[in-house]
Image (cartoon, rainbow, N blue to C red; front, side, top):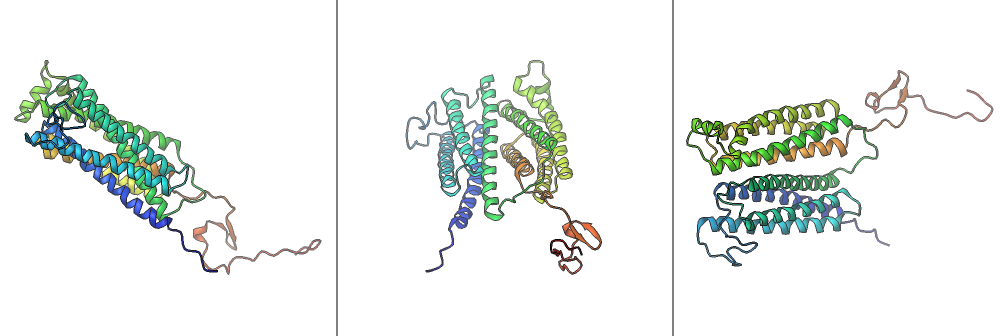
Length: 358
């Protein structure tokens, strides 16, 4: 009887992990393209039609705006297909009840949410030069759903990667509830910051300034539009959020010993500082489109790193719980790390027959 063949699950998980990271990266490109649609005023390029463009399956390039908007819809459609493929693949590879399955299912939910919000923006004409509060609320909803989609995709890709590279340990160290609360508050703060940034970016698009002085005058005007007033407060919201996020990252390094938590903590710190500097540069340069896209992608990267930090701090592998008494040596009890590989200095354990003593 021959030796049974090795299971193909690890190889399948490796391919799935690479595909999951690809889907995450692809969605970042689609998000950046969507921001370009908004910043260039091309949202009405396909008219009041959805999902068709100007009522045509293959739209004629009537304008640059039509090409930009039609391209965004095509790439968004591919993103939806990729996410569905990822979910089906994850359900085939991982067993019932696995976290990967739940994460993949959430990515599908949030991706359909993206499609519905995009459809609403077009059908209700909340695009191009519309400056209504309905559009502001739709931008906040869109940004929030986008962040949740990226978070679900990141967790899905990371859990697939972790399942492929290092199986979970049987016992884990107890987590600090305070750390969980602090990281949750940091995530909520970044959501608020992103929402204010989305409306501020909309104000830059609809009410452009030719100089910093003119922009400040617009913001301080008693008759300034609500978008401009929020543009004025956005840097202060960023400062307050920075204090909370950087504090949460530092706290995670102090109370958690896992190397991955420390690496994600450093990544969150570096990305937030870079993003904040990019925001200042964006203001200085009067928000050119390319700088808006850079700022957005840095915000997305910061959010992803913070989500993965929270995930590792809550569910990742940390120091093992001490489930057995320490090893006894001639020098007394000591942790495992202090016991040399040789066991020559440990007295062997022997058992005397009943009724006898050593």
